[in-house]
Length: 305
Image 1 (cartoon, rainbow, N blue to C red):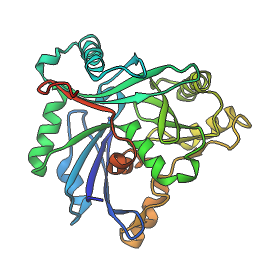
Image 2: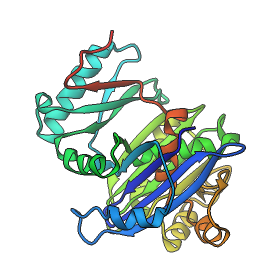
Image 3: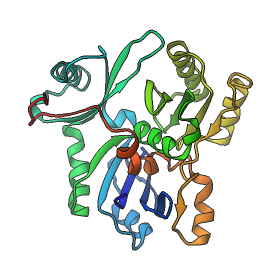
Image 4: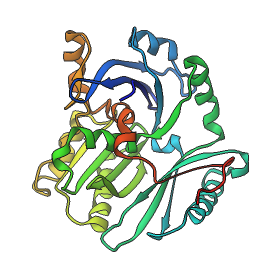
């Protein structure tokens, strides 16, 4: 495992983790948490100071669904890459009012099949509006920066930390400050992915997403929840709403559950309860081992055959 710096940029807070190879798996080498004064501000210097002397060879930037530009569209199981690309570019034009000729890259994930055998594609798009943030990071770090979406990264972190659930159908909920995401995973495949804007009643919005997932995918063993908007009160509401609904009660997703801690003992104890906050940052470092895109396209490249 190559030492990786993962930076999860939520609207009000930046979470960072440096993950490398430990004696039996992943090791947490450094963490950083910095509040953003404005949406345009990226407090790199403050974050770097918290990471102290940690070193890395890869960098991943993790964005929430609304910031990462997610395009979703139905596909056939055997759709050829050229058709996937055509559908993707149509979504880029319609959703983001951007011409693909202006430059884009996209990692496309095959989602499904659902209970009725239907498939979807979800594309994490890097568009022109991301160039300034990614460019400033690449300049500051002196190396390329990969982009991913917070839910995809969280799923990868779940796959690493909860291997006993690989053969069970499980829901993953990510509650960010502006969006709610919900996915169903089974056998290291994503069967369902939907999202909604965060509103004044996030537990009601989450319940709607879960009911939608149950309709499309059938029963779930349990639901794991994570994200910066997961408060104790919201979690208690969520538990009450789904009491007895699943074979196992809902639980917070602990991104540090199976990670070796390379931090100072005091800091390690302080960070341990914050696993659900760092889930996107932790999982992004491991994503390539657990959840790689089925296709990657860019405006400058030909469609692979």
